[in-house]
Image 1 (cartoon, rainbow, N blue to C red):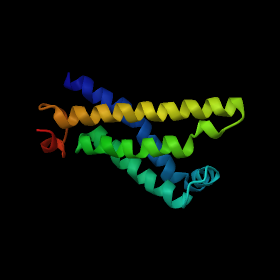
Image 2 (cartoon, helix red, strand yellow):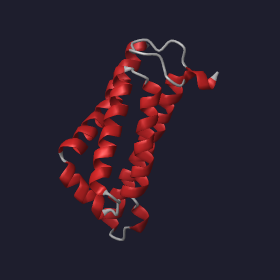
Image 3 (cartoon, one colour):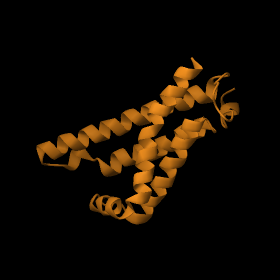
Length: 140
């Protein structure tokens, strides 16, 4: 099972690594998009979320305090769903559907990250990780 968990972490984390790298290498373009969505301090927000995503993804992938890494991803995903994909305020039907899909995708990924957090924080033998969970003592 430990190999299955490792493969799952890799498949889950690759999306966030790519996204984090995109935030840090395509900052100007992403800041323009964030600004068009009304995000304050768009450039700083893009850079900050890029670091947040990359840190969380690498922590989950490498198994370094993977519980904390999963929570970092939740901290990115939930506000992003609300701030960037507010489908309820879009009038064009095609755009509305696209934003709703992105909103629901972000919420689903946040749910998966919460399940990963619970798994890492409460499972005694994680196998194939570099560290033990950071927050496991909170749930005993």
